[in-house]
Length: 470
Ligand code: GDP
Image (tube, rainbow, N blue to C red):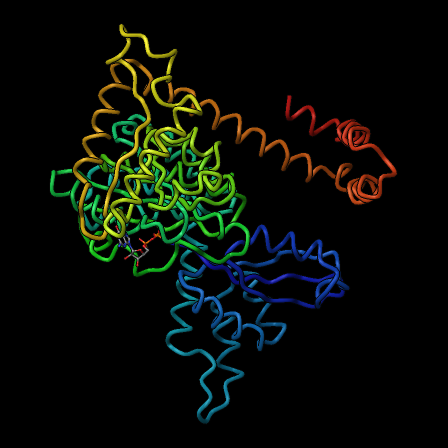
């Protein structure tokens, strides 16, 4: 569940500016950087208050409310003096029909106050232990709520939430790793959600518990969503043995992928033994998904074989298995696609060539990427697909590749996040941010070599930041 925020900025001229957002950190950066709008001429700005809401509508309603407030009332809000806020609301109330604080709004204020006041307690050991306990041992409903709460915490941009999220993950880590992690990618319309729905229900019928997480790169660019509509996976989404969570909806792809990876760990700790991570075939999201899963599956349409150019070789290399979906539409085309993709994979050296070639001694010990035909809509071929997955798992477990892949992934995630963290710290460094605009302009205009600019900026990074990094 995503949080929405209402915030108040104190501007240099003493005025207040109120707004709402679902990503407070990004919004603050926009305010600081922008030279349009009310706040652009009133810098520096100080974030003096923020409240968290469960819905966008709630946040907007509250934002509208506080925009009409007197200065005294805003200051009471900033001070956290809710009694005073309410008093001022009453004293300003017009006696007739005007109701300054409707019941719903009062609830919002109370909820907001509770969230803010609950903060120290939320960080306390008891609340955290309770959350962990509910994730590990809660009944279905309690567990679901606890997972949602934990994932909200992971996705929060607040520093104190991050500390708590790290503690939570560390505590859950020993209970993770037992699930099979399946990555599924394909262009919009190929049939991912139709397939995941039938696969999920098939697995549940076999006694599994299935979590479905998504990485939607469109949301990181535009705030929009290719994958996000709610009607997807209608039956699976309401099944008590399934947990479906849409993509975190803001941040860089790296950030979104990190949150998804962490959400995966929470689901595993809760006992979901098949975790499916879905993405669309756009940008680098396939690599991110392949890097967090045990097996990466690429979905293709039957006509894909006709135009192999359309399949990026890089993505093909990631695939442990290719599905030709919608085989029901044109059986011949599906056969052709299977043959063509198989031979293309041979050409790329992906089939019969994994881990050192086609040596007879290793024949049973190697997984060779393969192609299967399927009709998700008619629920045909799901069993063949799952048989292949089971074979993959057996082979890769016994030859040690699965464990090696996970070890490699954990380390590469660590370095990825270190890189991202260092870059963020670097950009925030006062000496760097002072020099950055001019140097960027010089590099853009060809007045300064990029490498010289980089060296100068690195040299400028303050001694204190460098010491912290060391
Ligand atoms: P996604 O965007 O990849 O999640 O694709 P969807 O699962 O939403 O499917 C897109 C459309 O293709 C929908 O209208 C589905 O009913 C249809 N579809 C999915 N799988 C099949 C299939 O195997 N055969 C046929 N004929 N249609 C399918």
